[in-house]
Length: 224
Image 1 (cartoon, rainbow, N blue to C red):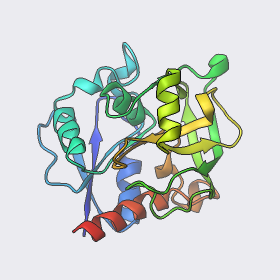
Image 2 (image 1 turned 90 degrees about the vertical axis):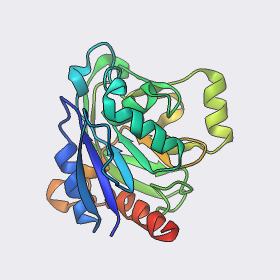
Image 3 (image 1 turned 120 degrees about the horizontal axis):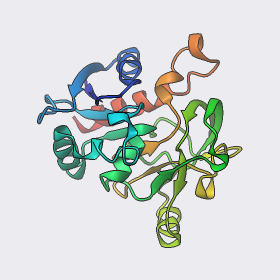
Image 4 (image 1 turned 135 degrees about the vertical axis):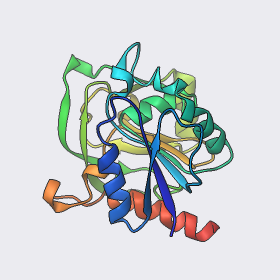
């Protein structure tokens, strides 16, 4: 059985939901603490949503310097699957594991609901069980999810097929309707929507979020 670690920072609030989603997918969930210097031998890591360190300075700016992030960055560079959800996406950008930045939503309004997305790429560790072009519904809840990058970076992301998800009906002003991206290697993915909140019909009509977790298990099984 593969193991997936979920990092808890001070201010994380979706860590338990992510652990539950990992468990529902059939993998072993492993809690990880921000002050640790070890990933406890896990096969993959999730940086969950929330307000790490109170979102002081910028969202994710302090979490990027948490002791455990040194190991996350090293392991990601070595090929370990890493998923950043919402605040976790912001941490990945602050850590330069992914390019760009997340700004205040257009209109400065917090958005919350069930968001339609289009799968742009299934050529990543976290999306290989999706179909390119597939339309899915994933929960969103954020105030600073407006993805921005300079024109050169946007062109590179588009040309390299590193845009993983696009909003169908842009809720926050993100450039090119970008909801999630990947690194060139395809092992690091960040997105603003919350797949861990779309794994049971109890919390919404969609269970599309489970496919993130089945994807990484499929990848790990093939590379074991």
